[in-house]
Image (cartoon, rainbow over all chains, first blue to last red; front, side, top):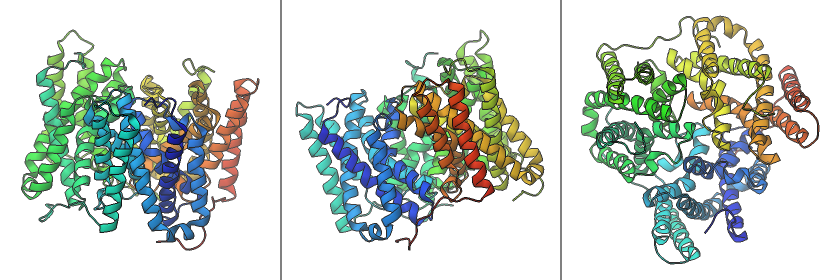
Length: 211
Length: 211
Length: 211
């Protein structure tokens, strides 16, 4: 379970998750009319931001993404791809959303596991898992000067928190890590996909907003 | 004065301050029409953000709030309360503002003391005290995509800086910590309450803004 | 090349860079109609933000600016100057832009050198150099609730990345540090000045933005 020598398959999963998130960040930049540099930065911030925020908060600096050039190359590739082929990618929005659910599931698992590695308690570790999943999207929206999408109706954070919580709970048992990881990631992905499919929304406050 | 084993009374004060700040964050989220998750995140960011920013800057990671589940429970409780009862809370705005002044006074003191514990000099420690007090509100407004309220006219940061500076100055003497803390916190709270009462504003630039 | 005992000339350069950046931040605050505190905070965030972000990411906490009161005094002085004399400074915009290019050149060099000191690889160190140069401006714009200017057309980040990359490449040779620093900083400044003079823009995506 050590994150210092992650297995090849975990690195591949991680890079795929970063790639998908980076595409979503780059598409937001294109729609905002930003230049090529803005596209690359939003791609990088979305793909790597969640891990950066987690690593800075738990004291795991420098973040892993700064110690491995592949983690920097992937968002650059995603950003350039979106810069040139955004009309095509924009039409594949639904596919991007579905891949994004897998990225979310992956990040909530790796985030929770890393927080446990750094001796955080169960509630903070679950929170860090969720934050790893949603942090990139929040940073993307802050840099694009808009209220983070994850705060506005879409059921996105709850699946990430549920998946991370299941990982943290499983880590208290004797189950092997890969079982825990698949259970937690599977729960997050399944919940998120059903939410997309059925247009589930998070509840909003009722009654008149006080001014 | 060690922050590793804070006294019960200090923890209670801290949790009250977090609660009040979290309520103010949750009310902003309700007014922005965010969903329940956005309300909880803005509650947490406002209640804990100042301490997080301070701890990340002085290298005290993971932040204390991630090592103690009570610090996570309080903003969740405040967020849910605001989610359900925001019409009532909105009418109690003045009470919230007054309680907020006490939260500010508390945070500027604990922030300055913790920075001194981490061997910062007098000017940076006073700055960290102020940042602990105002950081949560700034993070709340950045996440809500609006210019931080603390930059626009209300006399809010100056009392926090004054209180923190008094604490830092007092720490150079032989006075016991609780005396310093009460003096600094009291100065901040009194100044802030008078500012609310007399509608004191921070000065704005005069003359035409160059374009 | 140790950053723990920087030479006097380097400190002077650094303070000049912080001053120029702080002026630009303060002018944005004045135009937004913020109060004196908002002006000071935007001055500080712009002048010191790039270094703060770099130091937090590479784990060099507390940031150098919190260990040396001169680093705090300079943005305060710049902020007060802009608060009182903004009509004059606004008319000197072109001079400020040119000085800003020198600040950028300086920060990309010191940022890359510090990242190398902290054992980052070549690609991350070049990225940290660029981030040190542009981070303050990005933080300024996030706090002022607008899309960062560096993402919108102006050729600003590329010179910083090029300068930082040259520094990182030079550090692999036996050349003395001051030669590397002047080469990298000179490349960044020259490129940026030509970009200002010839109105070079970064490319923007072509074709209809998908919605």
